[in-house]
Length: 368
Length: 267
Picture 1 (tube, chains in turn brown, red):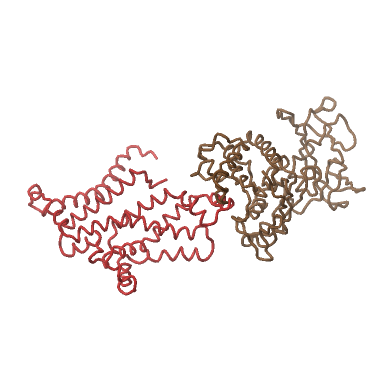
Picture 2 (cartoon, helix red, strand yellow; picture 1 turned 180 degrees about the horizontal axis):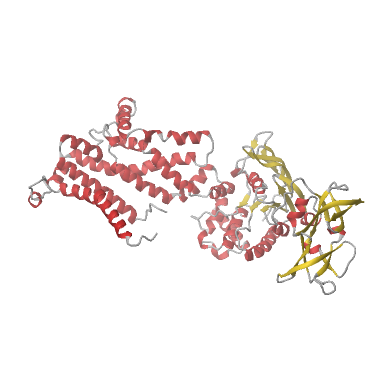
């Protein structure tokens, strides 16, 4: 499938329903052949942004363009109708037309474009083959499994070669086991066909696995954007840090600052960490470290905590342990090494992986 | 909910209700249609007759009433549903003032008693040029019925439209279908069963409607309903009973045929 090489650009997009501001100035770029994930909790505006690009929502301000084509321009009153935008959209519910066969579902976009019947035949069949749906052409949607329906929905959105494919939570309707396989399959398909895709998801693992770039949205604004590695390893805000992985949290006060490092102090413990954002001595702060970066140590040392082992949980591929330090709970993977026959263990929190964020007035921690 | 022994009482109440509201009136009409007269001291076996029906079929206006009623219910009902669908689609997924005003506007004819609406239509057909010529055709009755039952018909259509997930239509728009194409190729095919059920319900209403047709009653515009009112006024009880039974039979046959061909009133 050949792709017209054009870039999707969204500039300063605003959208509101009444007084409810859904998008508050979002800008982003999607380069040809790139997959961008719109990540966020529910209500963050990610689906609204996707639907605005598709033309299904009416923004109040900003600009959306693909290459030289302006889809929306609030300043000049340009708003291209949905059907003229030539985009492919995969709905969360798949939205297959129940009265049409798989073949007719996929062929509809081509028929609307006046493609000759013989070419429709060959292109739909190619799409069916590409998506592993070969034998299902004459079935009706309700005769398909969830995974097959998803493939039909994707085939339907791809068959007329849109410059950008939009996907709204494409995997969320599949059950957990199938989802991981579908994720790998979808990533392979996108790479193999060289698609430009904008994918909405609320699952950070899914976002990281499928995309080249992630836009993390929080309450209608972009919290941080970058490659999956950047967001996971170098979060700029506590929100990003919390959203992107499983973490241990330690609340305390900054006791000392030294070249980009902060000494976080709590009841009976002090740890050096990498300072994030504006911090000064005496500030309340939160230290965050990924579970997998928290290490079990075999004795006292730098940046180590003496904690009490509460319990261990067997997860199959690894073991997760729960430790107690005062009122705080810490988790980490591995085999605990109890100190001198007791239940106390030492945990090491490497300085570079222990991020110290200024405690926000009202921390909006996502449920991860 | 288990009622225990009380279920027999409940059953008896339901049975009694059905007897008094359906069995007694209908069998009464049926009986009256087949006798010359009834009353105390008359042996019904002696007065059995088919003369009432012969009388009905001898009068050309009453035959026309039967044919007109049948046509208004079937073809007219279908056309009315088509009109309601067109209006329903025009307001479908439209937000804002016009759609809401339309919503209330269509309620007005329903708020007016059928008799008054019929009178209004009589005047329209008497005085409006272009419509005057249609005064003596069954079209005038059909138009009056369709307008009077507009609100009800639109409710039927909009409840069918509400069953469609918006994303099915959005998917068609994104694929490149204009608003008209979305309606023709997605919305309408998806509500086809709802439309058939609406047709059946409108058929039954149009078969039984009488008040709207009373003032419009004239040569060519006879329907059973208005004919019954007029015959009762003239004291022709025999024919009222016979015509009523024919009316009931028309509704029953229509209903049976529709259900036989798979129209479902409840999805």
